[in-house]
Length: 141
Length: 141
DNA sequence: TTTTAATGATACCTTTAGGTGTCATTACTG
DNA sequence: CAGTAATGACACCTAAAGGTATCATTAAAA
Image 1 (cartoon, helix red, strand yellow):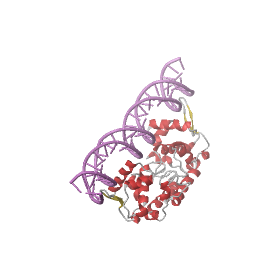
Image 2: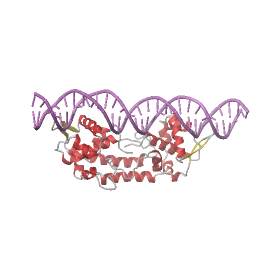
Image 3: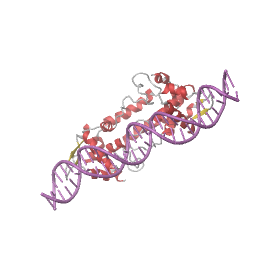
Image 4: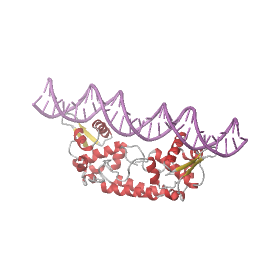
């Protein structure tokens, strides 16, 4: 009922980098702010790179940058890149067949809240996040 | 972003038993219907017993029964019994301090969908589930 | 009173998410 | 051109969730 740590980390990283998307952020910059273990952060950055969400520059003045324009990356894009759960037809009881065939006793009710959650995640982009960013305050604590 | 298997199993078990709450269900009855590995199911039943959600009868004609009246058990009660995540103030980015002090950039939006999910889980009881139960169909697949 | 079919308890195994450690490579800079 | 500060790659460790195995206990029923 909670995103995985890995997914939360990815959301932190990209949301933070969205604050100034033209900047080149080093792993150390991000480590200081985001409360993610340093080596795991490094691994995660490499992963996001391979997923095409980040680009990197090597060498002494290197770092990472968001690969696309902010309004092209939704929160759902980030979640899907780091979590292979299929949310679309997720049955409340975890039955794999529920949504398409028979309906379980939570089908309607659960469908509603699931859809509003999914819709929020799909329609909110990094650009929206940027415009509302108090994330720095947060990450300081 | 998904309930744990263990929690889903607990929801299956109690929702199924709610269909006829006065019946005594054996582990084998439940195993046949609920797609839960037999030995894990046994373990889980013992756990739900200790949590006070079930009562058991030992011996040859024994089995399990829901411990309270159906409208006294909400879905959230079941979730909380099997998952120690604290949902109330769950921050979207997983920051532990978010909800009470500073607000992160998803605070408002996330709060809304989180609250409607929580409210559904708290207000839906096993009695509601019983009244809408096609779960048998489901579990047959 | 023995058998049988149920639950109770507990220890162990397996997989995976999360996290570490080490060394190579790149490219700016003194 | 050597030193340095960054990323790249990859192997390994750890804890917890999920799942399995075994044996003891209970109580109805033959």
